[in-house]
Length: 331
Image 1 (cartoon, rainbow, N blue to C red):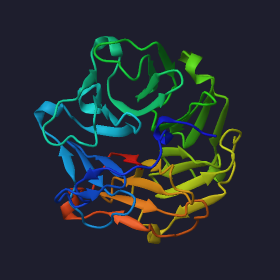
Image 2 (cartoon, rainbow, N blue to C red; image 1 turned 30 degrees about the horizontal axis):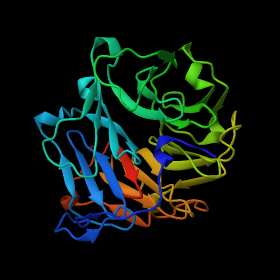
Image 3 (cartoon, rainbow, N blue to C red; image 1 turned 60 degrees about the vertical axis):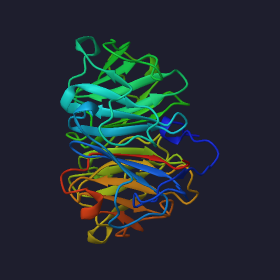
Image 4 (cartoon, helix red, strand yellow; image 1 turned 30 degrees about the vertical axis):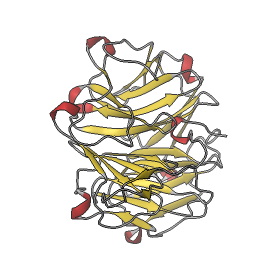
């Protein structure tokens, strides 16, 4: 079973809080959705049901946040902790009690400084078994110890050189396996035994070639059935490959979601709802300035439209300003 930090959730629970539209208190919030824009992180309540032109429940923004061109997000739902790849300031920001903060709030912890080797971090993954933080930064994947407490100007313990600018990562922590997207080469590499890799990457397998349908892959996920899900930016689509742990070569996807009906324009980071039995995929679409939510992803294919869309003036999401997404399905 695939385990990554994004899929670590406890028993479903409610929380007294504001409504999805950011109004008064007293209602149960079912799911929290976080979206990175160019200068802020916005949070929507009732993420498992809300749709349309809704007002965020919270907006983290202002000079104290030190947010600068934030990219992909990573959520630890057990710890209510949000990690931000803060590309514009060469840093990783960590916000504790993420579901309750709002406004011009400083991060709880900041990983930055010359020793970190951070330049323009883009994506994140956490290995909860070994307590390691993986950061995709240009052609490197920097690996830091003590992910749950790291702070300050701390050097990485490993530096994995991929030889290309990394677009996205997905970590299968149980099997010590990392999937890495190569947007320029239209490929997905698989690294086995990743927690002990250092220096030039040892690639166990690579999915690449004209049959794959890969076109600047920008987002990765692996579902409960072990399928690899890829968001493609150049030809807006979602491609799905069976048996992520063994897939290799110039193989065709088992399903492709594409076409005008999908509303996909420039899909970037994707995240699965681990609490959904039918498969529910949240897509941060940068060009559309929207979050697209596809239900029943276990059987989806073709030009299937999203079941829900979060977009419009009230959301504060605009085109070319949706960089990352994270989901807490149980808070």
